Length: 221
Image 1 (cartoon, rainbow, N blue to C red):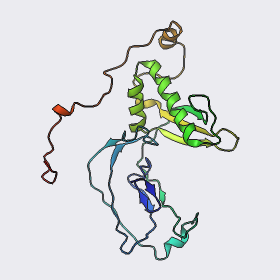
Image 2 (image 1 turned 90 degrees about the vertical axis):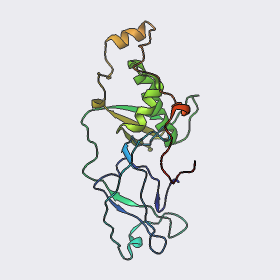
Image 3 (image 1 turned 120 degrees about the horizontal axis):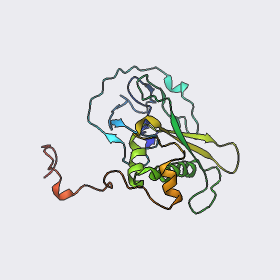
């Protein structure tokens, strides 16, 4: 269920409490439905299903703008080639200090991809994962962290060919230590070829044999 013309599963971090969303309507009655709530999510939800999922309820007000489809720009072969518009609400997470990782559209093998923002964002994510692993985290832990913490992803440059530039900004306040580049124990350990011991246990899939049984009577046994 991808993001699509009528909304779909867009998984946009800023689409949260207090937002106003303007959806195109393609069918009689609109058939509006909502779901897939996240307690917290990073831009891109990069580990596929890595946001902190949650149960909950939604209180909303719906208004029909008669003829409003005419306001949405149609970019494509059909008048229905439109996309939703939304206003960001006042209650999203806000931080004042970030560490920003840059990525360009050159993959891990050294191959250049002309203005490919997907490759550039992937590189920014990989650069962040490798960097934070110097501070005692496992790469798996950082990978999951980037899906659920309120990090900010940006397409920062698509003007200077051939490289697209994307950035990933990590709020410093989520860490219990200073992860900025500086002289100190972490750098001294790297110079000596020593890896800092991992913090906590390595993330892994839960043991399905000990998982609780679903109690929802609607679920098949």
